[in-house]
Length: 85
Image 1 (cartoon, rainbow, N blue to C red):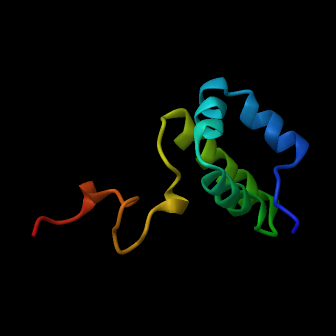
Image 2: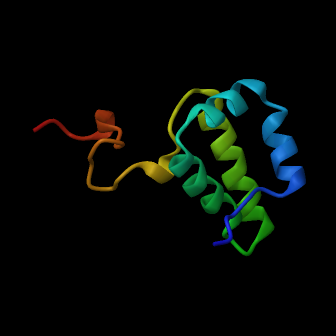
């Protein structure tokens, strides 16, 4: 099975932010695989670059990427923006 991977320049850009890269590398393989696919799957380069910037920013702030948040809630969802029950 072929696995998605960041292009050389994309990985270089990510590694340039040491804090973000260390956080990303400390995450599970399944998390990294989904995040990389989310970054590299769009056809338009502008979308790929925007997603890479989001992933780097989230990683720098030690946040799991929004790609892992469930719309309906669940373990990964940020409940802070939900109205009180």
